[in-house]
Image 1 (tube, rainbow, N blue to C red):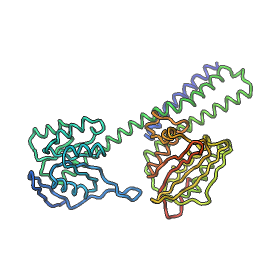
Image 2: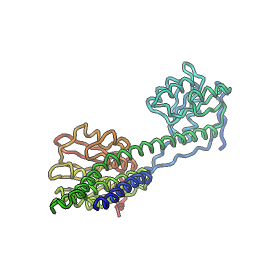
Image 3: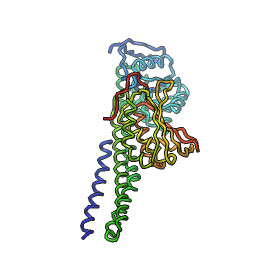
Image 4: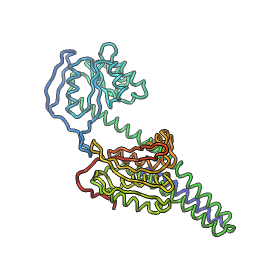
Length: 425
């Protein structure tokens, strides 16, 4: 009779968990002037109406893209460089094929404009070499050449080019083609990132949820097979174990939802009341602080910074909970903030733990998509969330530690002149 009752219940739990894991990722889840060069009869229509790049939340101009121009005619390089720079692109010129290959390998561009007829190494060979290299094969290459025969165009596409613009050309046409292929490249990158994220999500669900679910099943089996034989004290132990395992599973799910939300959501940076943010983080960790008998030392005042209070609260919770679990016995955590010369503010937590080796430090703050490759004991998912939050907010994360000297975990945010008002509701 007991088996008939428990079997559908356990089966329903597994079905619900499987369905919920699928849902999690889904949640995460112009007029101008004509200019003629002295070689090849090239004519360009230089637009006099530049576009303007969008400013990010830090009020800094963000280039539309990094473009490498390869042409052996200095006048052509100058015209194209000037034209694209005015349109908000970051431009690098290369006078021949070998210089271009070196420049690409040092700093891969977002797109390449490539001439064909050049001394030494022509454009076809440059393109073929780049497409043969796994690190550079995905860079879109647009051939720009005075050669206009069908065979020349076929050779360009056969070599790996994504487009072909004959000279002379209109600036508007070149800009439209560049914009199209940069858009396609960005979509490709976004798709690759989402695939990597989905794969990492699957690994995380399988890896991190396995232990608490295994514990729940083990305790359930014990109750199912021996419930009549267990003493009250043992039943209390089993119940406590089930509760802890379930809480851990729910916590993992909440972390995954937060991670997905940070990736998808754009937020406005506001002046923070850091005393309020830290206070609410402490309140959420009240039971844990009591359990570990932790001492938390706070500064008298906090400098005002820009951020998003709910996410910064999660950063503090990760740092404080790790400090409580892995510091000294009892743990002693000192919090503070240090203004930096570049206008950023470094917020930090100093603990009295045993310290971390350089090898252990290297596994912290691992990108979420690499958690299946490197797992830092007890830290992996939480500090990956911290890193993603700070990447999204334009800050940095890090740790300074020596064996026997404890550790200092920190994050940075831009300073603000206004009084802090942002705090979690």
